[in-house]
Amino acid sequence: MRVLFVNPHYTHDPLTLLLHPPLCYGYMSNALKANGHDVIHADLPFEGNRPEVVATYLDDYRPDLVGVTSVAQSYYHALEIARVVKEWDARTPVVFGGPHTSFIGPECLSRHRDVDFVLLFDAEHSIVELVSALGAGGDTTVLGAVPGLVYRDGDAIRTTPPDPPSLDLDQYGMPDRSIFDMERYAHYDYETVVMTARGCPSRCTFCSTTAAGRAARWNGPKHVCDELEQVIDLGFSSVFFGDDTFSGDPRRAIAICEEIVRRDLRIPWTSNMRAQDARPQVLDAMREAGAYRVFVGYESIQQRTLRLVKKGTSPERLYKTANRIMAHGLELHASFIVGAPGDTHETLAATLDFIRLINPTVATFNVMEPRPGTDVYRNPDRYGIAIPDPYWYETTSWLDLPVCATENLSQEEIRDWVHRCYDEFCGDGFRRPEVMERLEPTRAEWDAAADKVQRHLPILSG
Picture 1 (cartoon, rainbow, N blue to C red):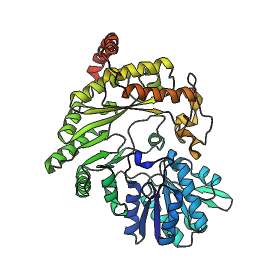
Picture 2: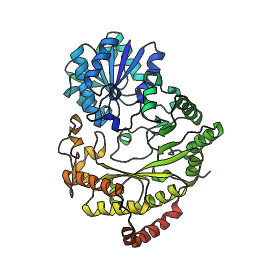
Picture 3: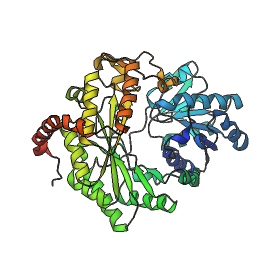
Picture 4: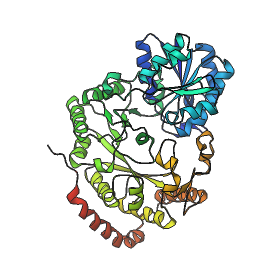
């Protein structure tokens, strides 16, 4: 059978953003091709950035199945693609997947007739089973045997249990990058993405990865370095490890770094990291292996907020982590939630002062966007937030106004604070001498607090 995967378009100009190939399609392509099926990929951000562009692929390729992945922010665009497919030929099956629709499968089918199926979570196996079921006629008996599938059975919507998550990620091989126009990606951006893990050891209540409840799983060091060699051969000169936390398994992280050095893979790279994973031995190994920057989700500097969202850290540790990362020769990209539970005008002003003191290379400011499946979405009252439109992801209104308000800040005030944070951080006077002089007593307080947590510094043992 012929399978067309589609990377959704954007409401705004995609060429103002980082663009990386959606590797989930590459992994599913491996499985489909191994079972005799054909796969192509339509990359709408590069192909006119309009849903109607899909019609050209439909005319030329005439697929037997169209697959669309989405996060919450691209769900609206995925629905537009489904509409185009059904207008072209209503008999062509449309299957959704990805980290958003995995939590709203029945809702998706009940609200949107243009979507025929939803595949849940890891889909390398289930996409092959679905294509085989459709090739056998697609009746409800064979569909009911496909793992992790949401489908219609007359007027009913049924869901089959997904397979348990595989702990051996190496079995999936390297993603099939032949379905992507990698020359175009390399021309657009010198950096590309490599995924070496799935899941996360944290339990943050606002995160879809946590909500999936799937154990953290890892690729082995040899596999990771084999893939690095591949992307170097494709012409990229930098890599972003897109795992939720590259060093969640510190021994594996060090082993990867040692293998990079052993093979003399001279490519700079960045990664995500939890504050509690910033161990000195790991940071040293990363720096030696070419890492130049780490991204850390700080989210908040309020202890009550960190505890409420189960961030698993403290303001003192976050402060100490910033100093430690930069002391080990790495740049810091610190990310914060504006309008987190408990935020006020005063806490956000204090957050800007905190950022002045730690002085990261990059700081980004994001609003809280409660996503289906998370505890924050299911129980907003517990977090002191209000979500005026629970189906916010079916629109693009989140581009203009934050999704939710807090007990202390309106949606408009949160939006204005995001603008203020960026304006101040990017402004020439953010750390002007008189401001830093004013903060010297505050710095002394943070230094003293951080010294108290020094004895709890995570180390490798055994």
